[in-house]
Image 1 (cartoon, rainbow, N blue to C red):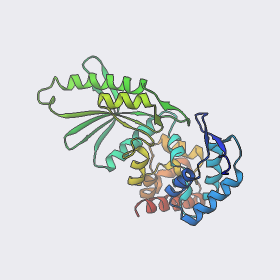
Image 2: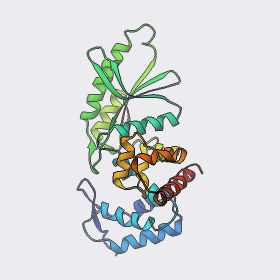
Image 3: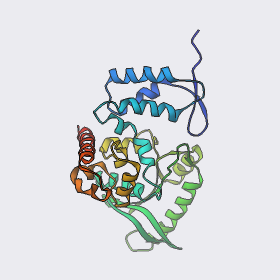
Image 4: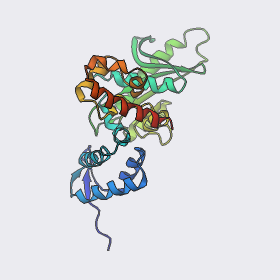
Length: 283
């Protein structure tokens, strides 16, 4: 008889069976070779116990990846790294704008747009091929939080007010306009149902199946600087406060590290990790 699966606890508090394949998939995304994935998976399984939090499983796997010189650990921590783009949420908006710019969009961050009833501060305005996008970014820095139906309800109302004003201008009514909601977590089923019904584009960490935030980052290779294991939490915050968001910014212009007052030996290690991550992203 097959032994019962060990039950683990997700960030949301839900108890689910441990699935080895999910761990392997997340390790594969780090770029680790199959042999290393096999080794880490077996070691994690040795530590498993009933009711183990998924955060603890992640920490064990992350610690094992950190022992290897390649940027596996930096890539593996992508999801929690995006949660470190806080607490204001503005770095997340800038990060989303950079991802879109990389994909050929013209973007503006934090613009005030006139609506038919009131003015609205929009997180990201984007344009591509004469199509216009009004994008709201819902950032969360705590695991387990889900964007419920209230979010697309609120965003759709704002988008409708702005669209009504756009349509008053001669010639603009025929232009393509679309509202987006982008989050670094998940959407509830009701949020997805309402957003789809109202014609909003929803992008979450792993939604939709094709075109999720996770895929957008991996395809672009634009990793947030919070992925770097060689930076302290304080140094990351200093750089974010100075509008540095991407690892690529460190690779292209190492002087962006200056405000953090890091000593030369550590700067060398930070650059080595950042350059390895940027190089690995462009393979």
